Length: 358
Image 1 (cartoon, rainbow, N blue to C red):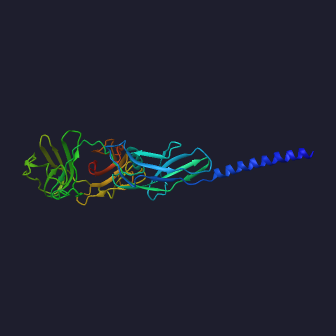
Image 2 (tube, helix red, strand yellow):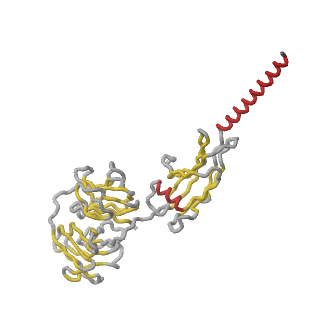
Image 3 (cartoon, rainbow, N blue to C red):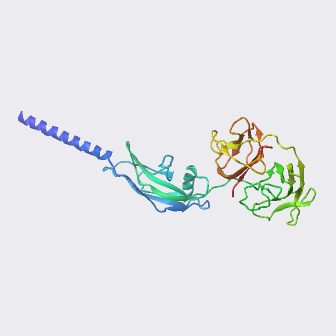
């Protein structure tokens, strides 16, 4: 009997010891060290000419759980100062401890974080490690990235008004926000502009800041591209419609009735400018209260409309990208490519231009 009791005691003791060892293994698994992340660069300029080259290489030391376990790792990217409230993640192959990210990969991540211009941007990177129900994060690695922006396919030639009869006067500086574009039309080489002109004269230029391509008066109704061409004259201030044909080198300039409605505000609204609940206000011209401008506005891929006084009582739109004549109550204006644009709108005619900023 005593022998049986001893044997039972030995078996029970062994079982308890084995159970303790398993408990200890489980206890070790629930703890763990944080991974340690590093990068071979602190700053990188991305170029569209080498999209498959390595932009930056990340290396890390895995979390240590005391036992061999399968780890799930991913890199998380966020804008600096956001505390990773919004981030983009890249899954990593199990077992590896280094990852070289290509130019295209990093560029797409930075743009997906809301960056819309090719300027140096501070981002933060961390490694997330998961095993079972436990998650560990590495140190944060700072990285300054200058992305590249593939601009929209824009094959149009813009022309602008210059002269003391126009808002911009004779200031030909590229920074002059009062140099307004003519409206391109669906007829090749034909442009129009309807609005207020002061008494004086004007010409038409291709590029603000340059006189290399200009159109002036050769004779009544005839344009000249000579630098010695005369000004197209405006004898009396008022509202006019200008139409030019740069191929035939002709123009017409006729008086039109002054508009009777003036709006307090004109804004852009939609997924391209922000969302359908947020108005992005345009700047009203002090020269012609029916011309509205928004310079250097970042538009996303989406749609938008123009609307008056922050209400849907009067809104304008048309399903045509870059330029056109928006109709009251018309469709949404599409924006295909996220980019920085100059936007012009004429509430007298509904004419608008959305011009990419070079």
